[in-house]
Image (cartoon, rainbow, N blue to C red):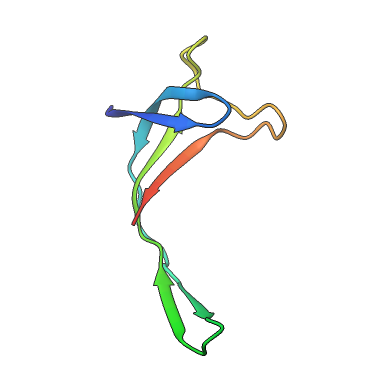
Length: 75
């Protein structure tokens, strides 16, 4: 299992388990600027990690939602 250190505004720096993933679909976001220029942007995930609770060593859950905290490194 590989791990990363991720930063979160609320939880600070925490360990995270790096997850394997496969791309199912990637979409383009298309924006029109005020001068009429069209910009196309595609976000590509490079690494996806699930945060580890420093107190328990288990998955870190967001208290308000009960969902695990994920970090997506992208370009």
